[in-house]
Image (cartoon, rainbow, N blue to C red; front, side):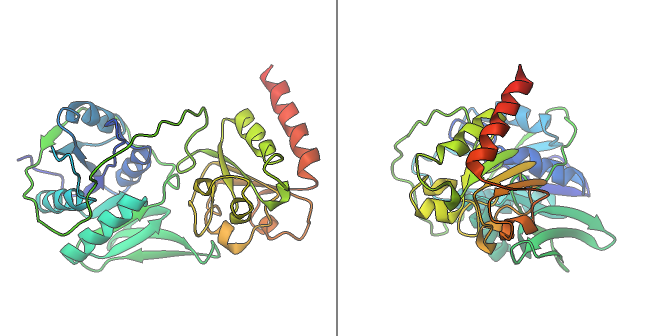
Length: 328
């Protein structure tokens, strides 16, 4: 077994159904590189380890620990928790970083409960001080920034996807197989999978670098197409407020906010969104926020870096036209 660095940060990598790294990997490894030496962990199907290790090393993983599973009826998250427990025992990390996804939060919570470790959820960044690892959070709808740290053991941190800009330098591929004894912990299981293929030229909302979101101010499903037109012009993902989703303008998987997806893109454009606290909770950590709303007192302007008071149906077509002109 390889000796791991004294400042190791264990990074749990999620994979897509085809065995590639999830988009959250780059940010997690980048964050880990700022506070120690990234050691990655992935649970993969047989034969996927070499390609995945190469991807992880390109993103900065010093070592990639792989656990191969042949289960056709996968137990939800328990194999990942078993693997994480085994990896933590071998690596003795200063911290464990996991994506703040649905599966990531479950893995983090189960591991923390099993190991007695402290957990910090939905962090927008991590750092190191004289006493150890510190997680940074945006709370109460972005009204406050707070820090959390553990006084014992490795701190388990779930990191908001897209919140970390840091990227680690590529490293030589170093892959290590990890033997894991199943814990037998109770878990739901996937008995069957029906693949649904969706073809889209737009990026996935969670983790997108650009997001164009629409609210109730668009007025109808047909008029919501304006959001799609601007998103296509910018190569952006499409988001929406809860009001737009409740009105049936767009499916719920596009909802941004407290009961939807939390995003931290480089650019967030809010069209016809009033900016209720529930929505701002999910987008306020965006690096640049642009709001277009005809109400000058709309709360969205309180967090916007750039605001346009005007009718979206007048402003946005002009913006799309200007973008098209610049591309010529």
